[in-house]
Length: 91
Image 1: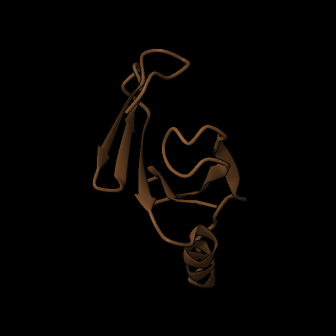
Image 2 (image 1 turned 90 degrees about the vertical axis):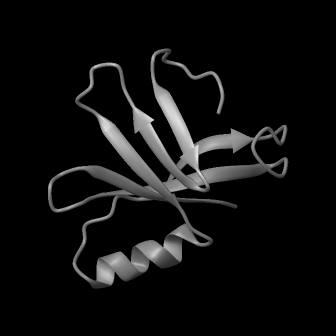
């Protein structure tokens, strides 16, 4: 998808579902693309899932990954096994 800092991470995009792998091999995350991250996370919270506050992951001022001026927003949570998951969208 692109060049990342820190180097050594791998990010795969499978039609909107992304997989992040880090060189230590112990950390991986799956990001699910949704239309409205806040709405989807509200549904998780209603079901008792702890969801972190929204984070701006990337300010896309130049339109590298989508319309210029938008930002990619993610909200992170864990599955029952402790794996990190996130919903992601742009606004």
